[in-house]
Image (cartoon, rainbow, N blue to C red; front, top):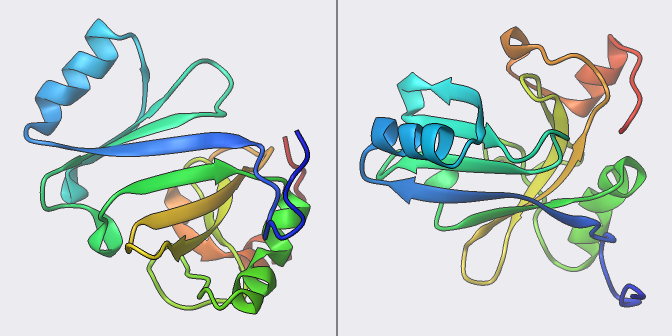
Length: 163
């Protein structure tokens, strides 16, 4: 399959999907105990949980209690992209009239790094307001204490490789 010539960033695959749930613990129990997904992180203060799908850390499911989603989340999907494409995504998005956003929803010219995964990501909204993400998993040990930092802060203090 050949990418479209006007494609902003070549998409390798779907990385994550998010669902709103009425009872977070019940849903954690279902996805972990019934479906066998590995619980990656539970964020009690945000009423959210994240599961790795499979063993490769290449796919994730996020669960959010109704009313707890970030950035006024309508629906959210993340696409797996190469790091080199992710780094030029902000410019390519702007060239198409799309505002690149940080994890916290602020306009940006560089990816955010999510320490607990770790992954680098750029966010933007589709015409209906759905949150879309380009994401690259980083080949480093997770650091949940790091929180969310800018790409420039991340590379300023670490050696890194991509998966």
